Length: 356
Picture (cartoon, rainbow, N blue to C red):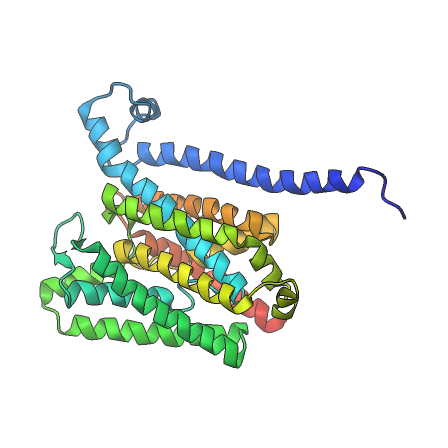
C-alpha cells in the first residue's frame, strides 16, 4: 500500500496538534486554578476582586495584602516547585531508563533534606522559631543549598554506580532508593536526637513539605533553578529520546551516553536540592506526573518535558489548594496530600513491573 502525497505530513501535523492542545489546555487550567486558589481560603475573596487586584486596578488594602503578600507567593511557589520536581522526575526516568525514577523514590530527596537539616542545625544557616508562619527561616540560602546539593549528588552517584554494576531494573532501583532514603532519614533523626525541644519541633515541622513558607525571595531562587534546569533538559531532549531506545543505539547515533547521564543526574539533583532546601520534602510529584503525561501525549521528550512541567505545576497547585481548604481553618502541609496520591501509583507501577 502506498501513502498518498501529503498523508504523512498531515499525520505528523495531527501528532503535533494533539500534544500542543494538551499543553494549551494545561495552561488554561493553570490560569483558572490560580484565580480560584487566590479567591479561596479562610478569607474568601470574590473572583472579580481577584482579577482586579492581579490587573493592578484599585481594590481594598486588605484584598491587596492577602493577594500579593500571602496567597500569590504561595501559589506561584507551588507551580514552580511542582514544575521542577516533575521535569526532574521525567529526566531521571529517561536517564536511568527506569519508570520508577524520581527524586523521592531514589532517596535523593531524603539526602537533600539531610543536607539542609545539617546546615540549619550544625552550620547555623537557619533561624529556629516556633511561629505560625514557619518553624525554620533560612538565613544563608547558599550554605543550605550547597549542603543539600552535596548530599543529593552523593545519593545520585550511588544510584548511577548501582545502575551500572547491577542493572537499572525496577527492583534494584526501588531497593536502592529505600536503602538510601532510610540511611539519610536515620542521619536526620540522629541530628534531631541532640536538638533541644524548640529545635526538634522546628525540624520536624520543616521536614513536612510546605510551599507556604516561601516568600518572594525564595520563590525567585527556586524559579531561577527551575528555569535553568528545564532549559538544560529541553536542550538534551533528543539525547533522552535516543537513550530510551537503548544505550547501544544511542551511542550509534553519536550520543555520549555516560556524559549525558552524569550531567542529567547532576542537574536533576541540583534542582531537587534547591526546592527541598526551602520547602522541605514533597514526594511523589516527580514520579506520578511524568507517567500521567506520557500516557496522554507519548514519550517524545520534546513535548514530554514541557508538558510535565506544566502538569506538575497544576498538580501541586491543586494539591496545595485542597490542603488549605480540606480542614479549614487548619492547613495541611501539601506533602501529606501528595503522599496519599503517590503511594498507590508507586504500588501499581511495582506490580505492573513484576508482572512483566
